[in-house]
Amino acid sequence: MMRRTHSAALTTCTMKGRGLFVPFAHGVLVLAFMAQHLFAAETSSTQATAKPAHVHAGKKQKDKAHHAANMQANANVRRPDTAGPLSLVVVGDIMLEDGPMDAMRKGQDPFAGFASLFAGADIRIGNLECVIATTGSPEEDKPNVFRVHPRALPYLKRHFDAVGLANNHSGDFGPQAFTQMLSLLKQSNIGVYGGGMNLSEAHTPWIIERKGVRVAILGYDEFQPRSFEADTDRPGVAWSEDSQVLRDIRAARSVHKADVVIPVMHWGWEEPIANDRQRQLARLMIDAGADAVIGGHPHQLQDTERYKGKPIFYSLGNFVFDGFPLPINYIGWALRMELDKNGVQKVEAHVSHIDPNGLPKPGKVLADPTLR
Image (cartoon, rainbow, N blue to C red; front, side, top):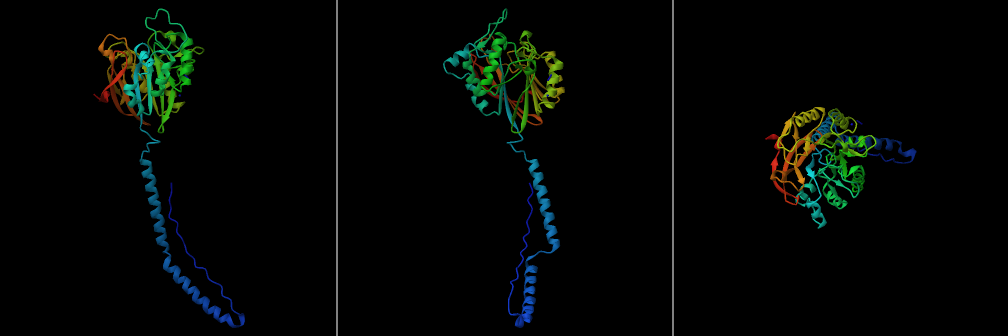
């Protein structure tokens, strides 16, 4: 723990001599005479249809060159069903209590505003910043705890392939509720990253392959409380320890054979500019082999950059969330990234405007913000 040949077929036509029978006493000379003429006719026919040896050799050489050219052309053509690019949509913090849950009780899909973006993507992921359960007890002395009824699962399943659990709210109602959430997500065929039934599972990437590209998603939390961290015999989230994070990224390639590796972080302070800690760790992760770094938790957008050509999004802000006092908390990004085996090839940021009930509405589409 703790990663086609086509070749021309030459057809030779050989005439078959017909046996002629006449009585021996009268026909020896006749047979000899006829055989001489038959041989002459066959030779003439063969010479009229067959090509000289040098022509055959030339055609074979031409066919061989044509075949080699076809093979090279096929190697240079990227087949979309096997070689990418694939599209990955990533959104920020998803908290489904309060306003979003009220909408779901009325049969309203909280993700409806972005349904077409999700439907057009090969992979869809986001940070689930609440626990989906009916059991457990709220953490003592924690001012904000979020628990959501399993009626939210059909909406998640409709729009997401996997959700991140590495955050400071997955454990709000204790290990029992966290365990129930893992079971419910599994039953709904929703993948998870950044959390598991034990330390090993929490640090194992979620692996998905689309269009011949194998993608590994990892998740880490470094915002308190650390009591939500998984252990060898306890369910929980993957905590961000630099050395372990770097080992996990390398293992995603060496053990899990991923072509693309993306760690998703829960980090930073609630401010618009990433801090030195975020920048340092982002660079370390890219040095270890990450193809992009995506962050959340500050509940607002943060700056972006590129390091060694790899994009870093320090915070995507909120996606589905209510209860904040400032307008800045009601704007986020849904990233659409195009990936192939060489990493991230294209990025768009779809602006999300969150209404007072915590539901996102689509805004304008920005060209790659890391290139500004």
